Amino acid sequence: MTELLLVRHGETDWSRSGQHTSWTELPLTERGAEQARALRPLLATRTLARVLVSPRVRARETARLTGLLDRAEVESDLTEWAYGAYEGRTTPDIHRTRPHWDLWTDGAPQESPERPGES
Image 1 (spheres, rainbow, N blue to C red):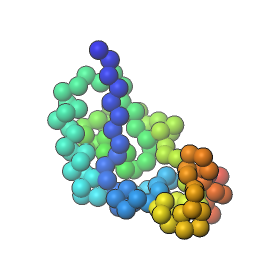
Image 2: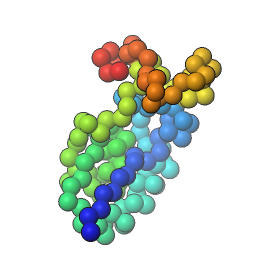
Image 3: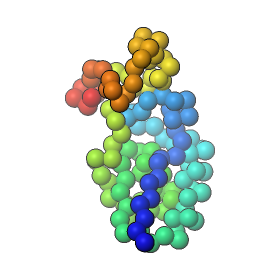
């Protein structure tokens, strides 16, 4: 039987608070590191044909703590959605000015002034 395993990075301060994160490099919280380490025994029992990881620090650190970084291929297509000007904001905060905003139907507005060209 073929399986596909998807592992999201461990908790960061922004994932805990619900802030949208794409290009901002955030470290794992201690809880996030614990989450990743907790996966290590489970993943060690699997025969994995291929391991792909996002280039983001949080994803690579999760892979390291699970014991998979040494065999992981960094895949830029796994980079998270670019939130543009909404980077670091929460959905409730965005809804104060755009009550019906939805990422999947409305997308993210303009480029971020800090990272032009990445929206």
